[in-house]
Length: 201
Image (tube, rainbow, N blue to C red; front, side, top):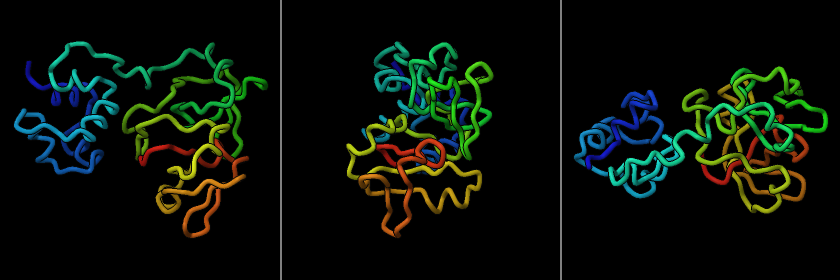
């Protein structure tokens, strides 16, 4: 069976330029994948599969099974929120937020809270290209922060310049995360001012 790189890209609604920028490769490389002239390396294959929500076998044409295609970005039913207490969720109107099942609301940037019944398009991950980055993993749970020595941090800020300046690898301490320049994010602001990921975005 032929490779499905072009098919998966088109289903995701991405141009060759957009995919090249996202993957950090040239547009020519994407065109070679689409034409079946070249196959991406292992790490790139994993990233493409995660981005598209398909299996590597599907991309390589070895299976017609879509696997878990787009399951991580599907819209969730608000009735699932009580089971997600303390977990990060994505809402198209507000971005990342943390679920508070006790108060029955989600807390967003700058302390904005929205009741469960007023939320729309609730997801575990944002759809591709709704923000300037797309994580290859879900954010680390608040209670698991101390399990790591280092994490990639994405600030929750409306200003893209400030976000770019502050994002990066941070060492994890008892109650805060700190980068090499002394910038700190306190654990008690997790979910309202920052989120942490195991992998670089």
